[in-house]
Amino acid sequence: MVAGRLLLGVAPHGRSGHEPADLGVRAEPAADGAADGGWTLHGSQTAVPYAQVMDRVLVPARSAAGTLLLLVDPHAPGLELRRQVSARGELMAEMVFDGVRLDASAQLGAPAPDAANWLYLRGLLIVGTAALCLGLGEQILRITADYTSDRVQFGHPVATFQSVAVQAADRYIDLRAMEATLWQAAWRIGLDQPELPGRPPLAADLATAKVWSAEGVRTIASTAQHLHGGIGADLDYPLHRYHAWAKYLELFLGPAAAYEEEVGALLAEHPL
Figure 1 (tube, rainbow, N blue to C red):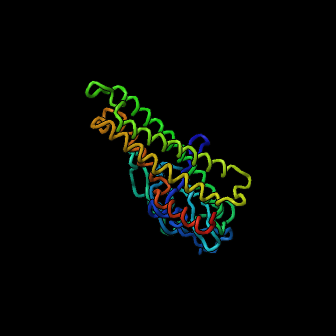
Figure 2: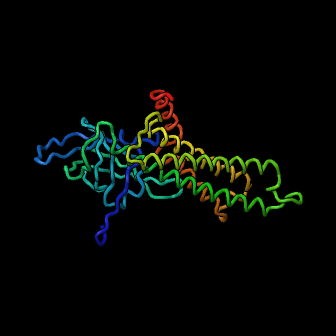
Figure 3: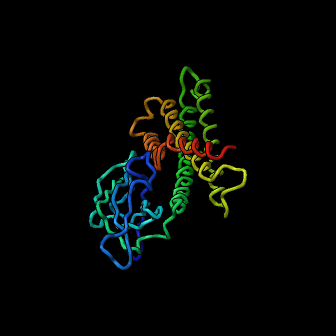
């Protein structure tokens, strides 16, 4: 903490990128008989951004009473930080909990049997990540359009070649689908009563936005690399950094496949 400011991070994953974050850590009532209650934590969270330099990390954890949101000191006794590095070179950590003791004051709100508190926070993270994917994808496509318009092959700009134009048009369609699903999820999560009669649950819109943003930004980055040719991988050209960031955002909060499973389960439970 510096000059009254608290650096707060969030543990977005479970033990793997595919596992929901609230399944990674188990919270049990503290066994020391403290009057204020408290919890003892076991388990792990992977790929926690900048955990080493945070004052507190917000960790979802499962208990018998439901899902908890806990403010954890990343340097607390019994907590090991194993260094990790993201696809774009950022510092991350696997947080391994081995009997970490927390006072009741570290708990935010009451335990939610339906994990409502964590799911709302997860929804905000999904919307924010989808917005980043959309902005990143738009800039990647802009860079690609400029490059293919300037590069001349056989006496013509390569952007005029049908195969190049079709691939760029497909990626533009991806962007518009990413935008539509992003704003649908943002609108739903911003409602006072996000669950609407006759409509799929909010979780379905959030999962759909995550699927489109993850697959869209990956496809856009891959197509851009292809249309640039060898220069796309040149470290003196900026596209490789956009590609690394796209890969990071694609997998942040879990891959598209995990959310496709979620959409399928929700549609089976709530048929249209």
